[in-house]
Each structure stands twice: as C-alpha cells, then as structure tokens.
Length: 575
Image 1 (cartoon, rainbow, N blue to C red):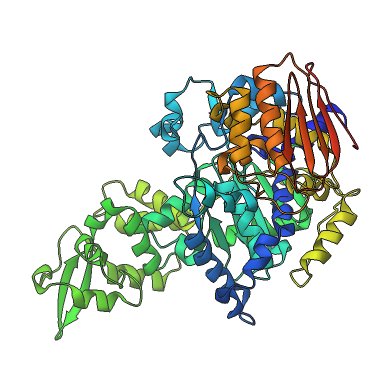
Image 2 (image 1 turned 90 degrees about the vertical axis):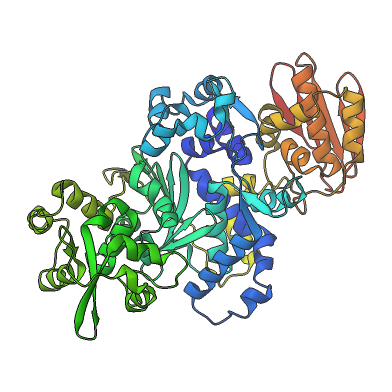
C-alpha cells in the first residue's frame, strides 16, 4: 500500500468519527463487518424474534427497537477510547481535506452549526473543558463485538456504543433480523450525530437507541424535538448507502444517482406534513408560550364551555389522552369542572374555529400567500404574527441541509446482498467483491479478519492510536504490566482468527495471548521509542522482543512475524 492507501486501511481498524469523515466508505464497511459477525445472526434465534416470523418487517423493526433499548446503553464517555489533539489530527489528514474545511464541518475543530451546542459551549457540553483547548477525544466507533464487550467493563451492565456505532448496529440488525433490504436503508451523518432513514411505510429514522416514525416526528414532545435537532440544525456531511456514498466536501459521489434522488424525495416527504388541527396542537405542545392565545370549547348540555389551552395541555401529564387528536374528548372529560368557563375568553382564538378554517381552506405553509393569509387570521390576538407563522411553517416542514446533487456520480458498484441469504453466503459474496469494491475490502479490516488481511494497517493502528492501554499501565514497570496481562482472562472478544486492538483488550480486561502481546508492544513503543519491537506468533506461542523477551500463549492459530522499527516502519512476514 502507498501512504494514502495505508491511512485509509488503518482507519478501517480504528474507525474514529474523524476517520469516517475523511474516508466515508468506512461507514458502510462497518455495517458490512457487523453483518458478517455471528452475533447479530444469533439474535434471529431469540424467542422475541422467532415468534415474529412471518410478520411484517415494520413489526419486527419495532420489536428490534425495544430489544436495543433493553440491551444497549448510549455511551459517550470521553475516555473510553482515549484522547488526541487537534493539531495531530489535522496534520494527519491535511493531504485529504484542507484543515479549514475540516474546521467548518467537524464539531471538534470549530464547527458551530447547531445553535444549541454553540449556546451551551460545545466543549463544556461534552466535558472537554477540563482539558487543554487542543485536546479532543478519539470517539472510536465500535464493532458489534466491542459494543457487546461493554458488559465486561466496570460500571456497565449492558452492551453500549456511541451514536455512529448504534446507527451501524441498527442498519445491520434491520437487514438480518427484520429482513429489510440494504437498498432501503440510508445512513445520514452530521457533525454531531449519526442516524438512518429506513424507507418503510411513511419512513422511520433511527436515533441512537430509539426509532422515530413520521407521526412521532410531528408529535411535539420533548423527546421528539431532541431527535429532530441534527436534521433541523446541522449540515449533513455524508449519506451512505449500499450503492455508495455522497460527501459534502468531495466532488465525486459513488452512490447511485437515482437512489440518492429517491432518498432526497422520501426524506422530504417524511419531514413534511399538512397543517391540520392535530398537527397545530402538536405545534402548541412544542411552543408552549403560544398556548395562552388559544382556547378549546366543549358542549355541556347544549351550552358551550371553554378551557384555556395551557390548562388542557397540563392535563396531558399523566394522561393517555392528547390535545387535538381523537382522544381529546376523553381528555376534556378528565378536566375538573372548576377549570371550565361558561363564556368565550377574550384575546384567545377558538380551536374549533381554527379547525373549520383549516377544513375550508387547505393552508400550504410552503406558500408565501398562504402564510400571509394565516398570519392575518391570528393577528388580532398574536403580538408577532409573522414570527408565529414562520415557526409554524418550520414545524410542519424540516428542510435538511443535504450534500448537493451537483456531484460527479461515478459508475456504481453496489453491494447486492439479500436478507434471504445465509451468513456464510454473504461472507463469500463479500470476499468475491474485495478486488472490485473498496468498501467490501475495507469491511474485512473492520471485521478484523487477520487471516485474509494485510497485517500492517492493524499493527500501525495498534502502536499509534491506542492511548488507553498505555495510560492504564502507566504506573507499572514492564514486568508488572506483563504480569497484569498474564493474569487477565485469555478470552478474545472476537471469534476465530480475528483480533482486538490493545485498547479493546485493556478496556474489557480480557484477550487472547496475541492480543496481549500487542498491548505490551504498544506500551514498549510509547515508553521506549528508540527500541525496535518484534512480535513472533507461531500458532500457540507468541513472543514479544525488545530489550527483553516476553512470552504469551495464543489460541488464534495465527503465524506471523511483526517488526516495528524505531524509525516508525512496520514489516510483517509469514512465520
């Protein structure tokens, strides 16, 4: 590999958020690595999914949501995968993207797209204010194996992962467990978030551990409003798909042009809705300050009774019924008689009059004349009617800031696999695509298949970007560190001839002897950069040689000699 190619392939091993931003094909490589993993395929055999066999993909997706909520935590701990600094990362990637462009597009390098994070101070929000201003987290994206292994980590009772990890997990699990074709799953990355659009029914967005349907998107609840933040405020940096990707900064796009145009249309339909009374009620649920300008009316034995909108919304708390929808009559029945007033309240608009208006004239909030008409209809009570209407228009339609369609769309080489195929058939297919499809090839590096991959990218990552294991052993001598590694369980979090990186072994305090050897080699390299380090793996026996020799026992069955010279060069050969 040349230097630039090596940078991409070693990034497939560590998968930091920054690496995925620079090399967007890595996002789908991780999804494919998770699809190759036996872990998610075992979920199919669980009772909660077995009993849904023959049911719709949508029903299985809703069950998958509950499974992920039950089994996984959202983890954004800064120190799980260690820290780096802005200068080092900018230097590393300057040959791919100019530093100024990175700063405009990446949250840890100056991006201020989301006003919320800007207002709260993004470094303080993420807990970075305790470090020097240049210090940033690696925020590595976990494979499903690393996510599952959080159960071994102190303080965790479940599997865990950050948002990019969870979006890759959802995409793979939706394919394997729910039978949703990859062609119907679009991955959406922004500077601060990662989620998927699943083209099923009216559309579903994954959001960390949860799912957001179109109905939920417009329900006006606090949790839905938080789920909207990324698409409402941030630029979308990458859209990844089984046919390829489109990137906000790159002129070339590998995604199928028709697939991208279709996605843009489907996402727009998901993010748009007609203005109806239930939707207007949801708007008032979000913008509570406007509730004081509205009232609701009910019939009581032929006489009208009125209740303040803010009072009725207060009754929603602890109730199964909601303002504005079919259950509103039942909610009104729960209201105390003392909260009803026998006359129309001055300075407030009646919601039943508003409903008649919307039924008589379809109000299209995209149309400036319609917005002007609606502003005029509320101006008698609303102090700033134009601002009110602008907010309402924004509520009923979110306009995402997607990468431009004005790209050089390259000839496609999509990944064509089916949920009906077995895991073994899919792995064989992806192996056959490695020479022609770089995403498929990179997937085996993310999968950590050391039997078929060049070892240099793995070794480079192991001795350059694994700070946690070094910090964890900082107070120990090399002999003490060796003893600490020896007493650790010998179980790898990866099955077969696949290897964990040093920080994975150290974080989860378990690892095969060959993985432990890389932990020790990383420590030696960081402490004594003037020393060459050699690892010789000969089936069961592994030896680390520097100023001294250290031996481990491995069950991986891998034979290889690895030599990391003091000048930074890495060589590997068969043993």
